[in-house]
Length: 249
Image 1: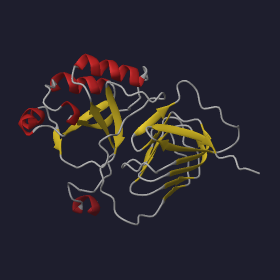
Image 2: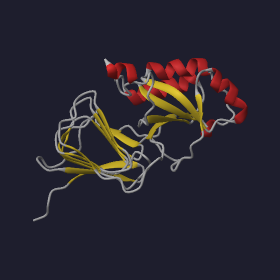
Image 3: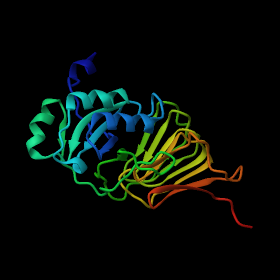
Image 4: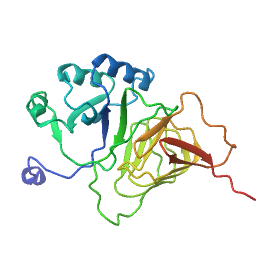
């Protein structure tokens, strides 16, 4: 009883929030809707109610109808919270729709999202995390299975998981990701823009993998690799490469 009386009504803590960066290359609503439909391939929980920051640098000066754009992205599981690289004259209109103005500089302005084939869509989506990284952060180690609906983020460091990552789970690291078990959910390495990051998995059965915001899905099947051998996933140019780690005798 005493604890409830002395407890403060509000506590403020620093929380890590991972946001999807929606990079618009065209403004027409019909074009954006078509691109999202193709990108998500009818998967209803492809983005799973992610927070999203809209980058409008590539369409600077073109009119955007926020009253239509916000519910459009909401219908695909993206909750718009901020706008990046908007002209100052457009700030009042953006704020009037409940969106913030994001002014954090980016380390990668050329991030592209690919969905299996490497093609760039009229509106591409890249996954980024703001750079607020403390130096010398110890590697995060997870010893229990990552279950559906769970999200783990190793901020500013590598992530090691010694148990399975199940379907519907998501693991994210600013560095590389090492999974000493089957990877069945989503794995996003180099989340703050590190193109040298890699993903290692004992068995690849993933829904999605990503390096530095460039991602690959496997609706059309997994690469033909030797069975029972771990894999490594890395970024080559703007494409995700999946290779076997079979040792050479």
